[in-house]
Length: 157
Image (tube, rainbow, N blue to C red; front, side, top):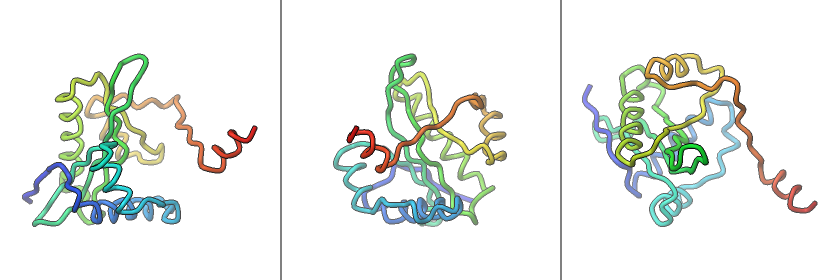
């Protein structure tokens, strides 16, 4: 199978959003996707808040990886991989690995000391894949989120 990994363009965002929705459906969280194409276009291409790579097969986007820079007080600038998504029917073809390698290369090209991401504890295939590439899966750390309700509650105190 031939594929191309390239930087996403603004006009790719409808297909990127479809991948995001596919992941949310897989996670039984379809109702939690609030972002729209216009948000992706504005935040990625006008405000520069993220970079996105897409995997194309026969001219159709079949996968994506969305990244952005963070700052660590221990390491300095890092790259955070927010999502790496491959269409269900394309899993096992090497597209996910190719996107993953592109993200790592992006981090290297930008001189970061760390590439970081979150993986669900139940995603054993991904955990095994990451560990086999030399990634250190931090099993004693927790991801913490505060939603809009929590934000509002805290600013009203």
